[in-house]
Image (cartoon, rainbow, N blue to C red; front, side):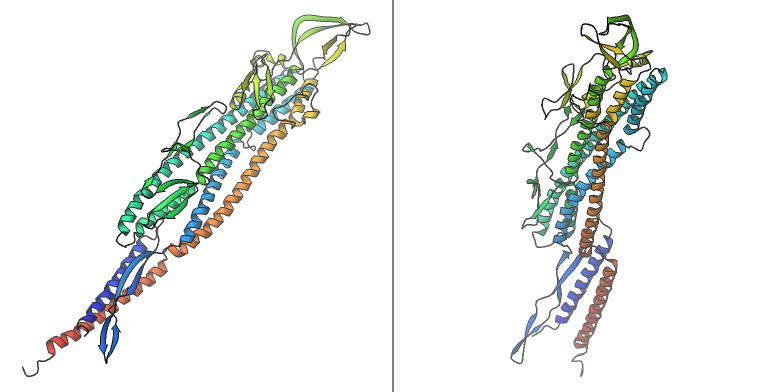
Length: 542
């Protein structure tokens, strides 16, 4: 027989269920702006019915409602898509950020840029070729050459600073990874413990998924959930988190790199000393940026090497205005006496006086310059690019080798180089051709030697480098924009499931409120019936 008080228990379960629903709505609304929060919903099920026999048959009478659980509204497919694309988004943004800084360093629109100083240096040689005997014109070449060398050195220093800045970001990224994986292991343990009795650790899971979101921005990440609710995190084949245990990513001590004048760093797994490769993401983009930035130092080194070898060679082939105090006299093949004042031949325009600068190509995998037989690479070449101090001394402009010469044979067949007049600027013309002519169109003095910039002109080599940078920047910005649109779509997909919608929550609030009131009203009605039964039945005749 059904209990007299059965209905009361049924209504109490309804009141309790609606109260839990209202509390859950309040929890959702309170956390609507909490990052990583997933909307929660009450899973209600009818409680076990009771069997009542009536007219020789069994009938099932409902006993109310129970809260089976409170679950997160989560789409695991959307999560995995987000983690995958977020990694690519982090990589693209890291590369785009680095390209943007490089473009700022090489800003060709600036009057003080490397491009502008190179233009002034070239124009100074062109002007001097027509006014070679003018002291101001010669001094202008020296000043422009000095400014160009200083600008190239300053540009290289800025690229070095950019590399060091990226390394600082790498170290910070590694610290963040280690901190987040620590927290994931702690949350793994808490979730396993809390869910051991069958409940759902929704808020802890939200915290853990938010950490995975952040980790996926930095590196490639694969997530595997174990039957006991813990996450195992794998990055590019390396298991970083295994339940409540983890490994630590370590940054090496500074490694002095003399070629680039910086300190390099490597990443490895601390516990096994195995090299760590993030595979993708922001950290991978930062590591790739370091390599690309070094390539721009290499390009600057090639430009400096060209000036120290090829331009110096051309300058040394000309004659200055500085006299030695001696006279040269010989009889030419026509029997005429040739007499002229001996003048100094050109020396190095850049670098040290009488130093021998050569571009060594004996090993294709190790191109470098030698100074007096000593190898120079990268930033070491750039640091050699200083104006010859003889040219900046008092009356140093007289040592600028702008004059050409005529080769004359004497009556014995011996060749003599007879300098042209003081106003001659033919060697200045040959120097200027190095800027905008390919190797084949330069003077015989230098067009048969191996050049640091290959067969291109000096302008072309630099412009090719800048075009490459501009194209890479534009391409990466396009990828960032496309990836941003894709991330917006995936985020909206996640939010459509996990996000808190105020209209929906307020609708649920009204539903639970009315359900609570209805159950209470029904309970009151049953109470009145029982009161009538208990207090009013059987009182007749008392």
